[in-house]
Image (tube, rainbow, N blue to C red):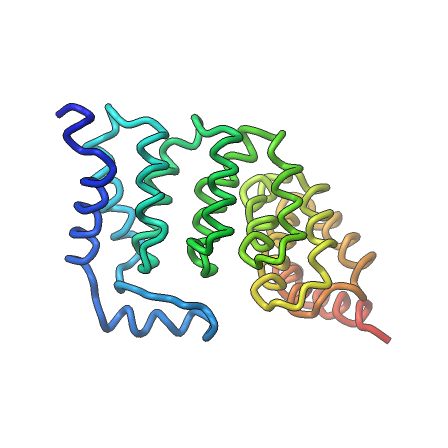
Length: 250
């Protein structure tokens, strides 16, 4: 097979045929309970392992021939699709080319988020963990740009500004940047931002729980309780209770 035999447009059609063949309407309906009512979510009802399996099988057809250009072109087709599973599939293919992405592609990714192609927590978190997080690890010079997303009126860019650090934070890397973005987002009233902020703080404490504790005690009165409760989940029960009491607003 040569590259022209399976261009992104044909790959997209095959992917959608495969995904729709695995659709489970009952699972799709049940899955909607995991999303907020204001999220415009459409599901085919496919388990994540099945999506990954399909992506792996189809990717094997183009692996010897495609570059990041075809993967980006595929995402231009899959991300605007209304189904979450289609968006996830496109991101999983792009993940295979992360090592060859550059600043131009970071701008493209920002455009996708700005255009609300990733307008639910599951899609934005997949994009962050599969693409943006490893991109930060490969290109630390992108960090400053991603941190500015915390100031965006687009809540999905704001969520990405913190969740993009999830993988390095788990390894104790870029913790200063995580804390800086977290502080910037403390006033954010959106529930999905508060939860994401607590999640990243919890993960950042994996390698240094004492540092996380000091940070929480220092800023506790400014931290939304939702964020704080997520952040302290891995502390012993007594420590969790103590932090909640000490940081309670007077």
